[in-house]
Length: 451
Ligand code: GLU
Ligand code: MG
Image (cartoon, rainbow, N blue to C red; front, side, top):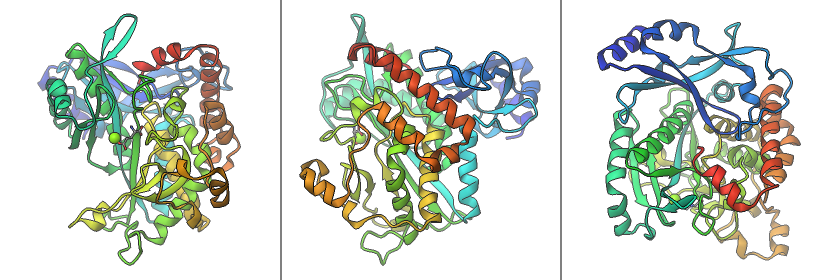
């Protein structure tokens, strides 16, 4: 959209404030707003932001990171095609921003730019990446000094539809009004847990959509007097909330799904197997990007469908990488891979970029996934000897394990670049240091309503 068209829309709709949002190293959505009268100028100049923000832990404790202290500014530069007037707050609009240097270059610590860089690398290989995130979340009410789930309903339960109906109808309308297409909805397993998925898009758009989605769900719930929690494990005795990532690689025209091969037993191309090979190779470090919070590791456990082992398999929901069965009549279009150890405490740009970096490494090195890691059972049912024989490793069981895997994965840290990798790892370590000194209740409380 042209800047002048955005300004006109803002004027016509009587919008007062337009927030330029970004997602930081802690997975937190932050932003600054401009008044409508100043928008035309801000679309060109951006809004200033201290470089220290990428060194801010997700409890707002500023960490020591080279080049990210009290001196220096970047600009929040909004991407015109992300402009949306907020259906739940009609005098507000949002735009998603890149972090740019004062020399008008992408800032090396910009998460959105990390994804753009990986998409450019994919494009150089003739690939465009399509992706969809599949978020799960809880509806809750305040109770005592914490929260209680909205209801006590079951998986796909008709009563769950009833209890959440008014909120969900408003969420669907608000998403559709912003151009996000709703695919499916159902009350998930946990009490008050919901799953509402939206249609896939180009990977950058898919990550942008996830930010708009989180904003929309939280705001609509809030207007119904409810809290929507995107924490990975907001209620320790209930199911965790994943944000599984579905993805596929298409040709540069976006016409042919290059993951599809009807002659293969699993309908996957050699390219798709190279992606699987790369992801299996880097999965331990990757999990630090897709399950980055302390609370993430309360979710990732055997027997909870959140996945706990580095393996893959057709329609295997306990495998880190599921090969989903295809839909009748749209076999090529529906071919994709589902990465399951991923949750909404992740920065969606970083999570997707990491996934693509790992997959492209598999392509560049022609990595083949081990057939022993392809399994048709719950890996938790295999004996330790059998797991070892097949080379199926446990995913990191704690945040420090994941941090260690990431800092020793030269492919992933090189893809991120030193500024992003250093600041990201510092923030993750800070979270570990803080939360490891406190109990589960403290951890849950401080993750509940942050994402
Ligand atoms: N809630 C599960 C998770 O944490 C996923 C359940 C499902 O398969 O949809 O990932
Ligand atoms: Mg689900």
